[in-house]
Image (cartoon, rainbow, N blue to C red; front, side, top):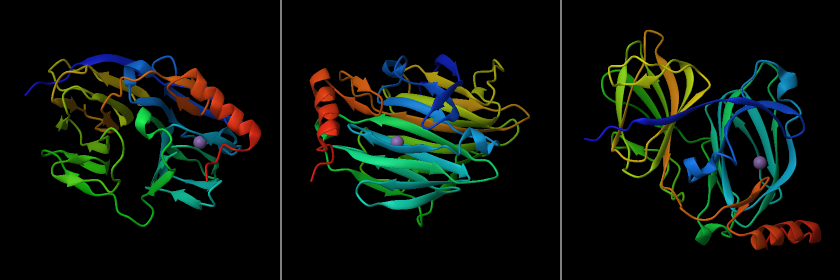
Length: 282
Ligand code: MN
């Protein structure tokens, strides 16, 4: 086996988004090349309703996917296709915008919220596919053990012969929510060449390499591309973290706001579609 090493770490930074939501952003435009096929990662957790209640009113998406995972609280979702629902504690929505949707995402909880949004790029061949939603509402997120002291919730992809409920997503992503007990360690198999990163939610997390270097909540650990396992461990505090992996697309990116295409011409087409009211394809 060939263990992954860490290539870089990123501290979350405060960003104002939507109609005035104060959130923490791990990476975006500037770093997206390093995280291919992932475009952006936000943590919108806060105990202060004024930080999130303004929400994300009507806005378009094309050419990419958004993955919203709620640990606590609720986000009401409504879109141009007539879909409406609430993403609640423990639930996840994997939204494939494809050729285009216009939606709003409004956090509803009055006692704080904990959740994340990941943006995933779509391959050129799928950017103009029909929009599609996969929700975990009413489905169960399978939970299993990995080794002797890790519990894993598998949202997408497979670990320990358990497959998450989300299907046929571009890039064969792995999205897992992993809890390590005090001094626990885990070896996570990952495909060689895939982009892999971990996001520390609670406790502290480091490589299981005997060096005792641990990273605090709000840190992204980006792994080098080569290697077939990510070996991680926790100190006495234990750890809860997301482990996210996917196949790089290695395609050009033309990105403006919530629209991510391959060329500037495609971006201009998207914005003139918005102007002309032809953004939503029949
Ligand atoms: Mn959105």
